[in-house]
Each structure stands twice: as structure tokens, then as C-alpha cells.
Amino acid sequence: MTGKTANQLVDRSMFEELAKKHERFLANPKTGTRLLLANATIENVQTTAVDLRGACFINVTFQDCSFWRTNLAEADFELSAVVGSSLEGSNLRKARLRGVRLRGTNLKHADLTDADIGPATVTLGGGTQGADLREVDLERANMANANLAGADMRRSNLFECDLQGAILRGTNLRDANLAGANLAGADLKGADLSNCVLRGARIADCDLSETKLDGAQVFLGLKDFDKKTQQKLLSHIEWVMSEGRQGHRASFREADLSNRNLAYAELTCADLNRADLSGSDLTGAYLAGADLQGANLAGATVSDADLRGAILKGAALDGVDLDSAQIGGLIVKSGGRKTTLETRIDG
Image (cartoon, rainbow, N blue to C red; front, side, top):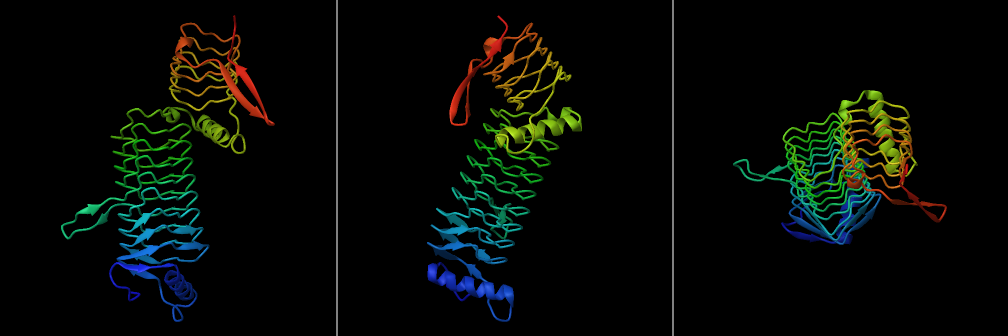
């Protein structure tokens, strides 16, 4: 170990010296010392692009620290707490974060690929402490294949977070923001996604058995389409979420989309000209600015669907309750100017 006594305070100068020794250790184990801390408090430390791969922090409290773009790959943070601190842009690939308390931490753009954020064993009898990630900011973080089983992630921000293949069994994600998140292949068995924001979330090949989805507005119909259509829908989600910088606008011109589950599907500005959507469930679907000219919507359910600025000229609307949908003006910004597009319907 480092010779630090239990609960010793490690200030900025002390940490900088420990970090230098660790970097020398990485270059040549004979000339440096691996950073190993336990039962300590690290305060007011700020690092940028420091290499702390494989460092060990057991039951350590990080108070008011900033580790920006720091390499913490394969580091061990078991039972540690991060308070009022930031790990933005840092590399935490394969890091061990069992039982960690990260409430309110800034982890934007962090790479947590293959990280282990499961529960830690804290008693000889096998008692465990789950990871606390409540209100953590993980916007656009990479958490592919991460183990988040049993973690408390209530009210966390996972906007456009990559959770592909992640283990989220029994994870509490109530009231979390998962808009645009990639959940393809994730294990969500027994997870609580109640009241989550899931607009544009990519949910495919997921285990949703026993998953709580009360109040969550999520598109679950992707699996019912062929692979080509799935890819087109996913590319369109990417196009919408990136504001046209990535992905491709979907064209379903004259496509047969009848009797489909398209509830909460992301179809903003999609080309659905003369498409057959008869009998489909479009509850809460995002169709703002979509081209639905000549489309067949007979018998479709459009409750709470966003049809602002959509073009419905010549569309078949027999049995469609447009009063239950959102229609009217859609404000579009382009070149510093604002334009209002109204929903266009015959008559």
C-alpha cells in the first residue's frame, strides 16, 4: 500500500506525487509505485490526461475533484464515493466500480465499456451494496457491455448513451432520461423503466421479461419488422437525434406498414408518401413534419401522435380521430430564421 493511515486526507500536492510515481510504475515497475489507496479522502484534485491505468481506490471518497480525460482503465473503485466531482471524458474501460456511490457525478462522454458496476460484497455473510448512480450525468457515455445489475440509476441522464449489450438486470432506472440511448442486446430483465424518457431509444434483441414500463413511452415494435426495415428505422432515429448530421432520413414511400405496432415510433420528417398505414397503432408516434400525402391511415390509432406540420393532403383518414393527436404549427429553425409549418389536411 502507500502507507496512508485510515481516513487520511490526500490533498492536491500529495495526489500529484502519487500519480507521478504511478506513471513511472506503468513505464517501469522497478522505478515507480502503483497507486494504491484505501479508506482515504481525496479532496480538490484536478487532473487532465493523466495515466492512472490500474490504480486502486478501495473505499475512497473523492470530494470536489475533476478527472478530465484521465485514463482510469481497469482501475478499481470498489465501495468508493465520488461527491461533487467530474470524470468527464475519462477512460474507465474495464474499471471495477462495484458498490460505488456516484450520485450526481458528471460522466459525460466517459468510456465505461466492459466496466463492472454491479453490487459489492460487504459482509462475511454475503451481504451486498449496490452501486448508487442516482442523478448521474452519463450523456453520450460509452457503457457497452457494462455490468450495471442492481444499480440505482433513478433520474440519471443517459441521453444518447451506448448501452449495447449492457447487463441491467434489476436496475432501477425510474425517471431516467434514455432518449436516443442504444439498448440493443441489453439485458433488462426485472429492470424498472417506469416513467423513463425513451424517445428515439434503440431497443432491439433485448430481454424485457419482468421489466417495468409503467408510464414509459417506448417504441417496442421494432422486432416485428424485417432486418432491412429495422435498419432503416434505426438510421432514421440517428438522423433525427443528430439533427441530420448522421444516419439517413427514412423513405417509406408506398410501403406496406399496415396493421403494425408503431406506437411511439420516431418518424419525424419521414417520407411516408402514399404509404399504407391502415389499422396501425400510431399512439404517441413522432410524425411532426412527415410527408403523409396520399397515405392510407384508415382505421389507424393516432392518440397523442405528433402530427404538427405533417402533410396529410389526399390521405385516407376514415375512422381516424385527429382530435386525439397533436396538430397545428411546427416551428422550424433554418439559417437563423424561424418558420412555422402547419398540419396540412384536405378541406
